[in-house]
Length: 388
Image 1 (cartoon, rainbow, N blue to C red):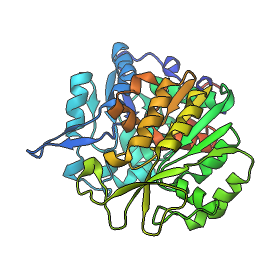
Image 2: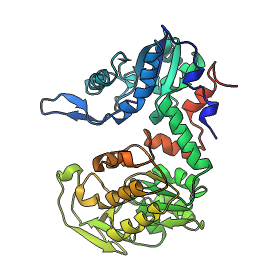
Image 3: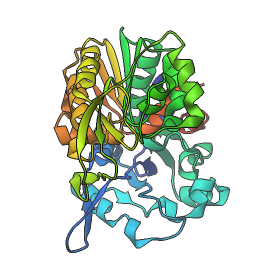
């Protein structure tokens, strides 16, 4: 298992006075487009998470240049994804740090092109990775620089590794994992990994319907992945305690749903048992939410990743809201993955009531699935200054 002690940390770097430091950050933040068409940062959580490292480097007398991606441009410059709004927010929070242009404007980034790596590190003396959210990507800016420069994990990245390593290696019991989201295919491997670690697995969101189908339940028009039906059945037969919804908040045939209720129409009904044809399950019901919450509150360790329903539509946000409140109230050690789970906590103003809020939803799941082995961490362990 990877631990911070095996990674080069900021204290392992040479004297930084007058040195140029390249810092890979994850400032892939949501943007708000105003009525005037101007983009501003809608949520600066990932920026503020990196500030302790950036300020530490500045305090050491370093010249600091941060680099990040934003959105999903097609390997070419796209004005919609230029870093200007992020740069404006960073300037307000941490003056003195330069922010480069969107890494994914360059095709060499995702391809881990050696020539692009060389262009990135030219003129720099030191590299710091403070981008846990993309630590599972073998991209040029993540795995390339540590081959050539003295390197270190940033304060936040090291803390992410410490926390996630702790809950995998020595969790307080009972260990409860709450996993939501849309598709079983996206999380089946991490579910299999969690099955060997946790005492109780709580499954909600769209992925729950493939599990329900594996039990022989009818799921109407809900999300269903026939290709992973046997995987779900194997988990259900494994002996692990798995909690699934017993009541569902469903949308009538022909209905629609959407963020903020925009474009939403159609009747909503609470259904116990099988869903009729044409009805779409979009949230766990109150009985299920209460049962999930009870288990969460009694946990010694709770890991939550993924909403329990279509949280963006208020009609289907109840289950996520109840479980989020239970995670916040839990007396155990609570870890919440980034992404939609973090957004739900932010909306409910509960971020400061959980033990640890990860900056990386996908990266935290990959960390669990791969037993702590991620490309970014492996690259840092092989840096010239890494502890031997």
